[in-house]
Image (cartoon, rainbow over all chains, first blue to last red; front, side, top):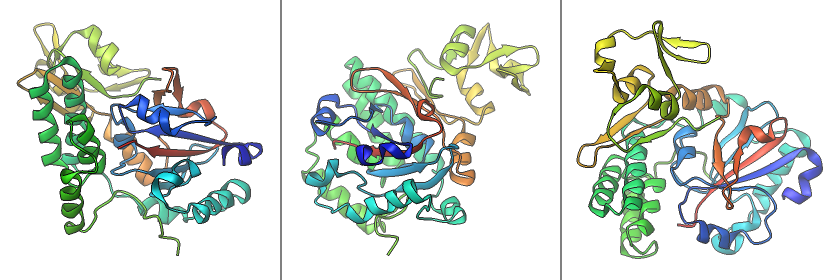
Length: 198
Length: 124
């Protein structure tokens, strides 16, 4: 996509909401655009992101024309997700080439709800937990991961992201328990669902 | 430009230097200042205690979220809420600086005047 649209003044920037550089590197063979590491989840605070993938389209004037779209917008992850991104890529091409975004300005302005105070605090406790993990204070890390979980129980950038950091299997029992809990809560999400256009 | 989030390893009481280096603000007679913006300090005695600055009070004044983990003494301070509100309500993309896989910093604003596709993903 980056190569195809490079002549249209277009830049892909990938941001890993992740601390595992080696795992991220594994995804990124042959990628030419910047792949950035967001260990502290700064993006999830600034853009109110609660799950990945989240795609944001930003125009030449720093205006967000499409906020937090749950799209698998590059083929990089196709082998991983099994989701055919063709339709989503067409939407991106429409915007890049023809300047016709998916949403109206009014729709975009109301598409994403703000973080609650609890969700803000959860992000801060997650940062502290990650820091304490790095200093070898595992009790302190666990305490702050627990606090973050309690504050934002349905936020995947908190709950799922901490699983590998706590030695939990991201596809094990904890994951299925989280998924069930999330479904029961009505799948709350700060963003725009993948298939909202149809 | 630096990301406006901070982690304070030695508790919320910080030096004037750390106020500048970690939080990006300066204490002046007219208030808390950054560039040509100053925020009035309603209760200076609550903010400045014995030559130290209470980062939690600074955060409250600047409308930044803050938490303190009492047991470890580590405090975390987030970005000004207005940055995210401008993104959600006015669709102004917040700038940020993050390292690439080799540690080289990149800013969203490095690619200003291009259409940008920001893809947040993860390995988890």
